[in-house]
Amino acid sequence: MDDDPAFLRVLAQFLEAKGYKVTAFESSQEAEKAIRDDCPDLLITDLLMPEPDGLALARTALEEDPDLPVVVLTGAGDVASATEGLRIGLADYLLKPMDFLTLERTVWRSLLQRTQVDFHRESEAWMREELEARTQEAIRKAQQLEDVTVGAFSALMGALEGRTPHFKGHSKAVATLSEAVATGCRLPQKEVNLIQAAAFVHDIGMIGVPDQLLDKPSGLTSEETQKVQEHCVIGAGILRPFTHLGPLSEYVLHHHERADGSGYPNGVSGDDIPLGAQVIGAAEMYCAMTEARPHRPPITPEAALGKIVAARDRWFSAQVTDALETAISAVLGND
Image (cartoon, rainbow, N blue to C red; front, side, top):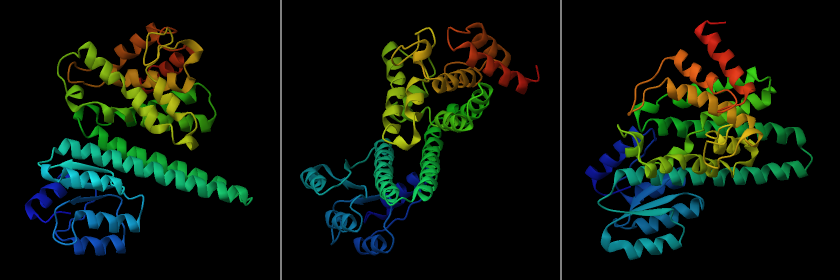
């Protein structure tokens, strides 16, 4: 919400282009009514507004929904007021003139925190139902929660891949291939489904990697490489609170580990790498090799498969490598 129509229009257009549904208001009164009628998932408001001002609007919104993320936009001279606003529960404040990249990351972070809060609230409700012996109903709701959570993260991944054309469709391709490899490893269907879900969000930690590194047309420096490699730890940290997803966060953490210990982030090797992480790692490596990147062209599917097969038991276990070879050969028509 902002009383400057031009800025309000630019802000709304920017967020809509990122895939968010936006409702814009030029007056606090209109915004207050909308909040009471149907509280939003996120509120962005200027601090200096005609009565009621942005801080009063934030209080009204937080009374309606104490977990609502509220982001306040403020000029440099209003920092003290904005800091006071943080004490009443604001999610963040941003200085004007505003950096839209910072705004995008703030929106991402705020909505992600909201998702975690909603998850914990629904988990408590689930436990109460369990205590009331409604076991079957609780199982159904747990599955529904898992589907909703994975669906939410899938939407986030779609927006994340939109940051650069080089990664568009990458997560879906890795998830599809991971499902085939996991099936080839003769894993139970529940485990196959979990690996597929983890594969779809394996790069969610890239939210913490600057855009200029993702789009850099030349090779990365050692410092930049280390920054990119942090996406495994960041991603696992994002997913770890969602305990109903089982070891999904561990699969994301270890998907760049290698059987001979040459991977990252922890340099673990052999059986210390979860099988699900190896499956995702093999699928991700194949897809990455056959996709264009800013600093290199793609290689052929046959060449990519040949490299991975040649490194059997060095990069991935023989079980995973063989399953990948079978899955890719079926697609290439070599079986």
